[in-house]
Amino acid sequence: MPLIFDQGSKDLQRWLDDDTWTQDLVRMLHPYEGELDCYAVKKEVGKVGNNSPDFIIPIDSSENKSNIANFFTKTPSKTEVKEEIKEEAIDKSEAALDNGLEENNAPMPDVIHPQHKRKHAEFLSEDDLPFRFVRSHIETRPLETIDVYTMKLQASDSAKAMRVVRGLRSKRIDLSYLKRIRRTTPSDDKSSGDSAEMEVLLCSCETPIEDIRVQLEQNDINAVPQRTKVSKWPALSQAQYDEWSTLWPLAWRVPAQRKVEMEKKEYEECEELMASLFKEDAVISALAYDPEQKQVIARAQDQRAEHPLKHAILELCSSVAALEVVKRLERPDAPSQYLMTNLWIFLTHEPCMMCTMALLHSRVTRVFYAKSMPKTGGMESNYGIHWRQELNHRFSVFAGWMESSATLLDEDTYV
Ligand SMILES: [Zn+2]
Image (cartoon, rainbow, N blue to C red):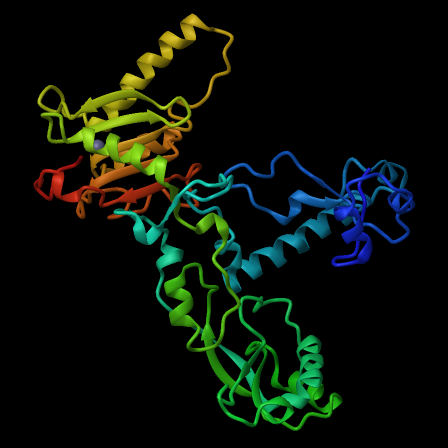
């Protein structure tokens, strides 16, 4: 039976401190009297690329299809449902067009993140790792701005200002990634407190100025709204945050899934695999590794001397496929999956578009490579095939590891 305590309450302390079962603890076991919001978490939650607030629906809400109460209530007519869906779709597409938040919520490449951080394990942060994480275009895009209305006033008027902001809350443009208030009096200025000056972000410039005047009048504020440039997009990286915040402060913290961290032990394991590529005679070399079994599944080299399509990656796919055939013959009842599900690939060079697509179709999880191919590569250099929303799988790419060990190839070579 779950118990609910107020944060920091005496009861909570007592529950945690007492070693023995006392009458005092028994007294705490009683039905909760407040109202609870209960949510059923759908099974789709947690899969890579599946993020949506729609996955969490209150159990007793009308949207919950499994709620038996809804079964007995009047079913809305088909036209009503259609209208509702249409409105929702318009709302969603407008929001996506206007603020790009929809795009920013799109699945990003899975990075090495401390999801199940083990105690006492040593982790290396992105700065300590000798390779770079290849980010998507929205994590590296330059500053773009939009105009919003702001106004200056005294800190003592902040409550009134927030009432104005609430009154002007625009449905169309979501500015939730921007802070609402910024201090204009320098923090070392002695005139802090109520006399300090601040600037409030009111709304996007799509809002008619007349609406703003009405709100200001209703709340007895005598201030002139000004147009101010702010970032059009929420920051997704520290670099974007640092640069874009200079225009107007952004509300942001690095989401855990975007942090690039690697356990030291895992790093050393990968380092050995990466180095093994260069011990072979071939110029272009690849290997597939199963991190769960800690086992190299296959190795392959470029064989174009034999056939123009025998790129290293395609050869690697063929080897893994051959092993898979054997496995399925031995265990016909075993569950089948995509060819390289959960595998990590190590490469001497950035693969071409064809090979990158082969890796995508095989559902690899991570790719490490040494040397970029600026003219022909399909990951960091061109198209960013590994992070594209319009494709049905995304994977992490780490580039530039042991770059000096890789042979310099002609820039027109397709790897
Ligand atoms: Zn290729």
